[in-house]
Amino acid sequence: MATEEIKKTSTNSGSQKEFVYLPLIAGWLVPGGGHFLLRKWGRGALLAASILGMFVTGLAMQGKVYANAHDILDLLGLAGDLGNGLPYVISRMLGLGDVQVQVTTADYGTRFIVVAGLLNVIAAVDAHNLRTGRKS
Amino acid sequence: MGNAIFQPSHFAAVVLFALFASTVFGITQRETPRRMVRYGIYCFVLFVASAIALSWVMYFIAR
Image (tube, rainbow over the protein chains, first blue to last red):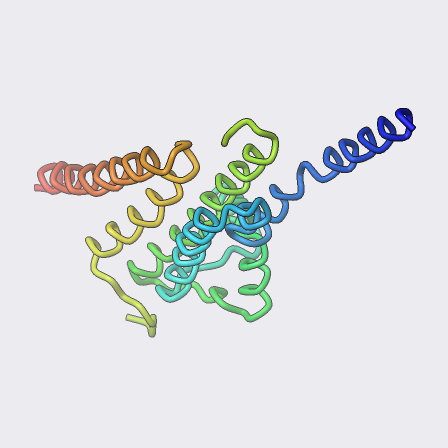
C-alpha cells in the first residue's frame, strides 16, 4: 500500500515536471495565457491588455508585420514579431501590416508591434518562473 | 499621409509606449503588488522623461 502511494506521488510529480513548460508556451501563444493558466487572473489580464493593446495600436498605426528577412535588421524585426505568438499568425493570415507605408506613425507602429512581441516573451518567461517557483 | 486608423502625435505615441511597456515591466520584474505599481510608475516616468530630455538634446544638436 505504501509502495503504491509512493508510486502515485512519483507519477504525479512526473506529470507536473512534464508540463513545466506549459505556462511558457501558453504565455507565448496567447499574451497573458501563462498567467491565466496559473490562475493569476489580475496579472494575466493586465499583461494581455498591455501586449495586445500595443500590438493592435501598432497595426492601427499601419505598422509593418515582418514576413521575411532580407537583412539583419529585418531578421531582428521578424524575431521580435514572432514573440507575439498567435496574434502574429492571425495578422499574417488576415494580411494585416503587409503594406509598407512611408509615414512616421507607420514607423512607430512597426516598433510597437516588435516591442509587443518582446514584452510577450518577458511575460511568458515570468509565467515560467511562477510555475517553477522561482517567483511568487 | 496614408489611411492609418490611428495617427497619434509623437508625444501621445511616447506616452502610449511608456504605458504599455511599464505595465509589463512592473508586473514581471517585481513580486508584490505594491512594488509592482511603484516600479511601473518609476518606469513610466523614466520612459517619458528620457524621451523629453533626448528630444531637447536632439533639438540643440540640429540647430
